[in-house]
Length: 105
Image 1 (cartoon, rainbow, N blue to C red):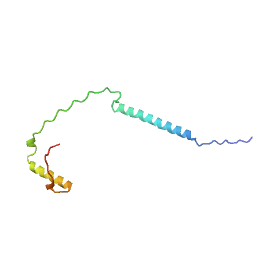
Image 2 (cartoon, one colour):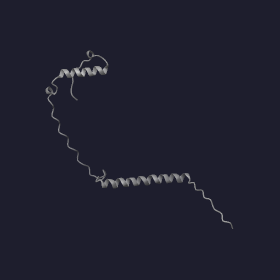
Image 3 (spheres, helix red, strand yellow):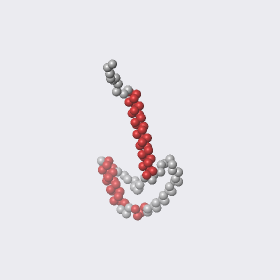
Image 4 (cartoon, rainbow, N blue to C red):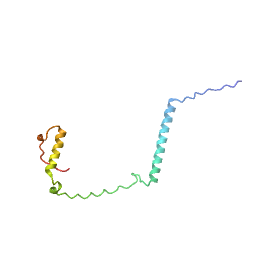
């Protein structure tokens, strides 16, 4: 009897390719999760789910109000500069602008 070699179809089927792809993706994702948790514990961080809820931070003290009269010694010059800037932006002359009030934001 002569020896005959059996040929095997070496090409994987569609389902084998899909299964291997899904398995590879999930194994790599699980490895990444494990590596990130290990790095977090090495760096001294605590995961958010394991930490107890912390008390809210106290509200900052309000800033003291600055005196309005001493804030701008030359108010007319400030009005002129703001008027000129607005007129330049609008593309018109200063005479077409009427400023009623100026306040600091």
